[in-house]
Amino acid sequence: MSLMSSPEHPDRYDTIVIGAGPGGRGAAAALANAGQRVAMVESELVGGECPYWACIPSKALLRPGEALAADRRVAGVRGGTIDWPAVVDYRDYMNSGLDDAGKVSAAQKLGIEVLRGEGRISARGQVLVASNEISAENIIIATGTTAAIPELSGLDGISYWTNREATSLQEVPGSAIVLGGGPVGVELAQMLQRFGSQVTLVHSEARLLEREHHSIGELLAEMLGAEGITVRTGTHVTSVARPEESSSAVSLVIEGGEALTAERLVIATGRQPRVGNLGLEQVGVQSTGRGIKVDASCRAAEGVWAIGDVTGIAPFTHVAAYQARIASADILGEPAVADYSAIPRVVFGDPEVACVGMAPDAHDDGLLSAQADLSETDRTETYGCGLRGHLGLVADPKRKVLLGAWSIGPLASEWIHQAALAVKAQVPLSVLADSVIQFPTFSELFGTLARELHSQAGPPGSDSRPT
Image 1 (tube, rainbow, N blue to C red):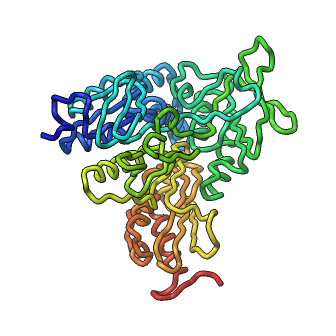
Image 2 (spheres, one colour):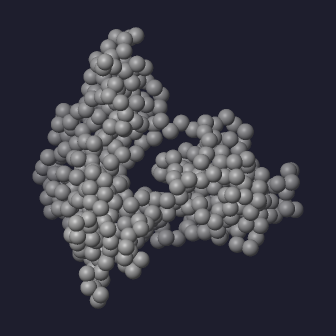
């Protein structure tokens, strides 16, 4: 038995994981299953942001509104209602009532020691938790992110919500301003609107979801507007105030002096890495505004790895779990190199937005691209009335492989994975074009577009890029 795992040294471990979100828990479990003695340090709830205040409760809250909207789209189905107390009860079931006892117990059954408190690296191989110092050969940083709060005049004196308050709400506000038109802002705006709040969505960029293909944000804004959400893009807020001293309402003053007023302000302007007071300087870990710098094996410094949202690479639970596999394999001496070329990105609104790989708006015109409307597949009309959306693909004309995809439509989170696998495996366009896809499905669009791209690419050996 090694000194690290010897019971004579209770404060020494093989690996210390700082942060018990999806990445931290995944890495700790993998290493414990491999026989390591592991300590997992958490200052809040074991499980992290996702199960309590983000992915899980937000999707549970989005689903009732989606089901009610579907009621209006399906021929012959009418009369749906929402029982708000029942929605709250189910949300509280899904977020475990903000109680992490079950996750703590699961970790302990694997032999992982759960330590409560903030972890700070005090020296190489040394971590201070509260007033106790523990040591390990390996340290994994998995501290995630926190809501980024913009610097706005008057905001300090205003009560506002972030995603945490919005997904933990007990009563729906009569009106709300959602500041930020990224994935979180779009989801929260639609969720509140469908529960009866009058919502204004304010975004400083020219379009919603500006990092994705322009067609996504344009159609999404149009569809959100059609269901009653006031969408204000290209709108810059200068200050925040109460319209009256005795009022609980909030006013946002935008450039030009116009004031937007609502009962509740929801801030969804992005995330920032939790790197403060971690002692990164003690071990030479470099951090930027985006997060901790890591190599392809998630190494941040000698004996230190970083995984999950704190790296700033891709802020998704599935990426945190992926990086946990990479880091734990590297620690165990197994070859492990991360590949982020085919990470799915989904906004779980209605309709869903799902993308993977390259966003063609940001790249040169020499790429091959094609786009098809949902109306081009029979699945759309069998699924509901008046549905809108599309799928787009982008390909490399020289290598003749898929580089990315963007989609908006029902269940897009499910049918994007056909494109994700094609990007990951670099499947030739000729193979994709020859694939036989089940009828009638939304995935048929993928086959249609693959054949179009294959035709654009030309015969083997040719380069069809425009001159």
